[in-house]
Length: 278
Image (cartoon, rainbow, N blue to C red; front, side):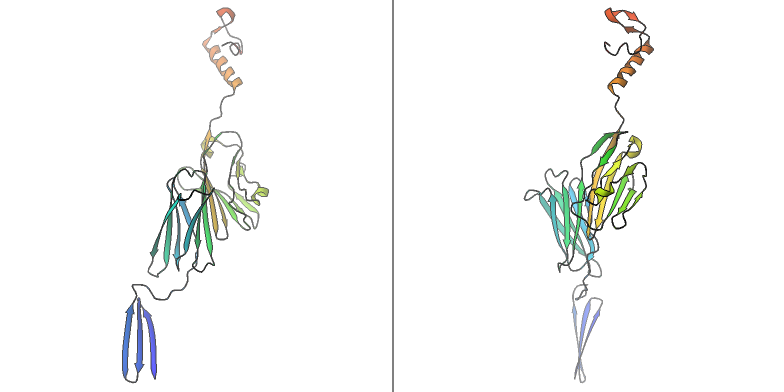
């Protein structure tokens, strides 16, 4: 009789064949990894973006997934120059990081990064758009746009605000329960009817220069997808209207004690005496 025993230990495969009184041990070493792996599904895809590049990463995957990039609007051929780095941990699981270098003027584009599992059963997509800055006078209602890139069935929407340090969550919405948690009640709101159509724009009712200037980000999270839209908002001091400016000038002249009337005569001004002929 022949008895075969295979043992996996510390990266070695030991094969023992026993026949009568003869024992032969065969050992093979395959680097520092086991020969056989159990598939590890994609759990998340993280996207980060600067002015020069976009990076997508996903940890603890086996086998290695396929990574693809796209933009909306579609970029010219050759504009999407990317590189992918794969590293392994002590368990033989891969961390995959793909970097896309931004070539040319791609401002206001949406970037898409997709990780497809080796067996094609999973596709995870992260997307991001950095919008043009918004400048608005304080005291006037302001809508900060946030549109989902495609139709979503069950999703959550989170709005954050960043001034100097860590982002602060100001609002959350869940499409399954239709419940909204609003930390800026009375200052900001969503249109829930539009939300179901993929429009998560945030309405600031009376933005204040000191409280509402900063960076806003909205995040749509769905099944195996995550979409982020970032917008920098600058709230400025309200401009003085023409009539108010006239009144200010009249007051300044009144305080000086002199106003020139018709013919250049010097006299004590009446209210608004300088508005038409100053």
